[in-house]
Length: 169
Image (cartoon, rainbow, N blue to C red; front, side):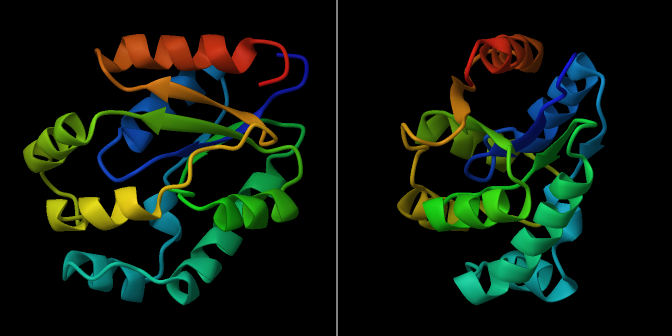
């Protein structure tokens, strides 16, 4: 790829950010970073207890993701991170100009079913309502694409790469 993208895979919990992010990174031939790994332990403990994060909790996490994305400028990379609010995406763009968002969208019932089937993840399904309440979809003026998460992960990743490869994502 001539100008490798730095992509933030965003969406509510259970939308497939990790699974799709890894597949998209593989298809693009760039590194993948797990957004959850940027959370301080206090955030993980809060979410594990079913307590939604507030903005004060999220700022240091977003700043860490932004530093990673800025370091990948010109090299390409994919990082997951919910980036549910416009203000969160603005903060990421300020840290890493040129970042592109891949918004994974889907029906709430399907996403809840997927979350319930997950093992080894700290995010309880009880927080899904707060995630959907917080979600502000990408605006027309934001660089990015929305991709529906119905289907197999490989199909979703293929649709995502195709959408990201279109002119002016």
